[in-house]
Structure formats: C-alpha cells, structure tokens
Image 1 (cartoon, rainbow, N blue to C red):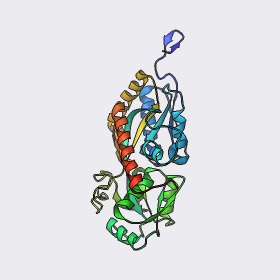
Image 2: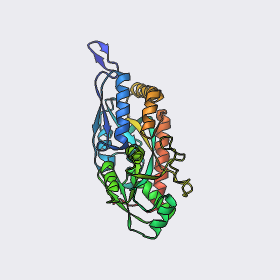
Image 3: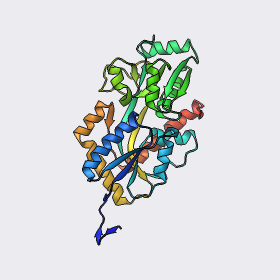
Image 4: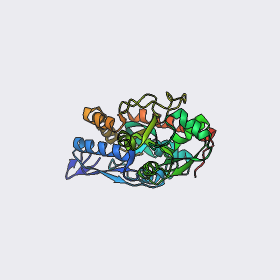
Length: 307
C-alpha cells in the first residue's frame, strides 16, 4: 500500500502512459484517442498517448510487458499484438502470462478496398480476375503479422486465389499506394478507409464482419458476397502489465465499462466504423485465447511464414 504524506495514495495520482504500439494513424490510434480522452475525464489524471511503432506492434507491446505493474503504463492492445504476432515470430513477451487484460474497448472489422478504376466491381469479379492472373495481384498491409495481413491470407486460403503481399511500415502508406494504384487492393481498417470510400477515392467491395456495418450498410459482408464462413475482426482493448494490483485492475475495469457505456463514446466509435464493447478481465483473457486458436489454425493450414 502506498502512502503519501501520511495519507493513502488513491490511484491514479499522476499521469498515465497509454502505449499505442503502432505509428500514428490507423485503428489503434483512433481507439487510443477515444479511450484516453474519456478516461482522462473520469480518472482526473491525464492519459498520455505514446505511439511506439515497430515490428507490427511488437516493439511497443514489449515495452508494456516490461513496465512496472503499477497501473501507470498501459497498452492499447489488439488481435495483432496478442494473437497473431506471437504465433508468427519470436516476440519478447508471452501474450497471456506477461499481461493483465483490463477490458475490451472496441471490435473492428476490415473493408476490402480497391481503386475506383479497378475493373472488378464485386468480390466474385475480383476472385475471377485474380484466378486469371495468379501472383499478379498485389495486396497491401501495414506489416507482416498484422490483422490486415491476415485478413488477406484468410481470403486467399478460402478462395484459392494467389496474391502477392506488399507489407508497408504503416496503414496510411498502404492506403496511399492503393489510391495511387501502386498496389491493387487491401483489407483496410474500417476507421482508416471509411471516409475515403464515402468520398469516392476508394471503392469498398465488402466488409469482413459477420454482419454489415451500420456505418456503411450498403456494402455487403465477404460472406454475403460469396465466400461462405469468412469473417475477420480485430479486438482493441486496454491491457496492463502482469501482476498489477487487484484493486487497480478493478478500478480500471470499472472505468472502462463506464466509458464504453457512454452513448457519446459509442457514437464516436460507430462513426469510426467500430463497435464499442467492454467486458471483464476474465472474459478478455478468454477472447485472447480464442483468437490465438483461430489464427494459429490458419497459420498451420495455409503454411504462413514470416516474410
């Protein structure tokens, strides 16, 4: 128990670092900003976002794994950092034992986007076009092992098409090259591409949710568009280092549940193409384990290797 000038220190009594383990831009940064602003108001202490990019989210995630377990360094983690990258390569952390998940923040899907001039106007036309040009279609991602990458791998495995993967340092760079036609397509984070689709700068062929997005209800799911069983979503959630004090973990969880229940937060998330969602620490751990099982199976059957 901490004491300050004879009084019990009430958490938090100083600013909190929130590590967003990707360069600025993309879904992680969007969710981090919403959560930081809301928790700053609720906790009465600044939540300072620190973008630490590198190695598809691994670098920043490793910083949190090795940080003091005092509640003052937190992570905006995701399916990529906690389910995919630990399966695909050596990472300096264990996604389960080195962390104390606090709560989900949001669930996100992806949108299969192409340049508006691309000849295929639907998923079925894209499949036919790709089969006629094996290895000639390029798909961009924000890095090997990210969920953008794995959404493309899952699509290839389930349809039998063969694309060439072009990993970029950031999601923004990947999007730019699809818009300039340097690469053919990508599964963009909905928050990153939704405004571009609305503006006609990209064409959305399908979303990877199990149901259509209420943000763009006219765009079908990949499953509706002709790929039965296809679904690729990503979680974003607040995660602390392992062995954080129980009362601190419980406080953070209560504040996350309160934040996600705020209609203003839900509206901002929806406008970004996200579904606000909270849960308990135990439920969050179970979700991470399910994601590890799902993407681990894809890695095996599709024989995916780190590039």
